[in-house]
Image (cartoon, rainbow, N blue to C red; front, side):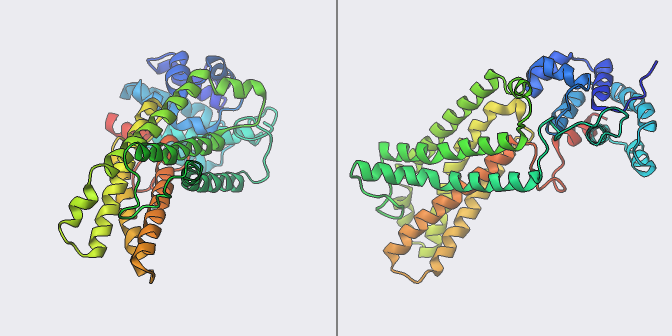
Length: 375
């Protein structure tokens, strides 16, 4: 007898009636959570967090055939007809042709009904992940994201200034004749790259984290996932250092100055190449998390290009400052470096988080693209 319950757990159970993988595969290789937590979600004893919906939809699309997806969709229509959703919402959901869109929206509606207590059972207390209720979660999340972004942009520079002061080194600010070389360029790159990836991970984890029961928190954050994040922090930082070493020791500035370009064009080109090299290498480190990523592969080169163009425009804007050339040169080096780190933070955050994607209307989520390709 088919169940008439329209709950996140029932949707999960329906999926595993047709999918070619087991619940352990979803828990271990897609969600990176303890399998016992997944079974609690399937029993609806613990609320399924909305942040996992995209991954579950991707798992379903990758492990079913078109005929199986059709069976899942038909099986969910019965409990959907008994759900307390409005008739308009039910109609829109039933008439959704794309399976990825249908499953994604079905999960979100079921989770919302579960949390608002409209499923006939006890009202779920707390947030979408079983956490304590929060008065203004969005504002808290946005504030945390802004703080992490600022810290990512300035922490590396502060650490570099402290090292310069402690060891009596010249305070390298950028600009011709004021750039670190040799081992100092490698150290500089590591110091400014590490805060970017560290605070991006903090922001992404905080956005999806819960302050619920210790049991839930422990199961949602296995040691191997934490270890993988340590690996990506180390690799990201080292590749950032390598990028700085390559740029500052390549003699590119001297080579470009021999072309006798106009001052503005020269500084824009230098800023563009500087940002391109110092962004594409650390972004490659994020491929360590490829099984958790929700962005297409071309996000890395396009992100590096974004950093390059943005840095070039920033360099151009400093030409409007009416100060001596030496002062403007060092100011340009400082501003371009900060802007680059802030851009890298945003890109890194977008790459490791499936909860912030402002270009969704222009570029479909992977689960949508996969669904259309497989239908």
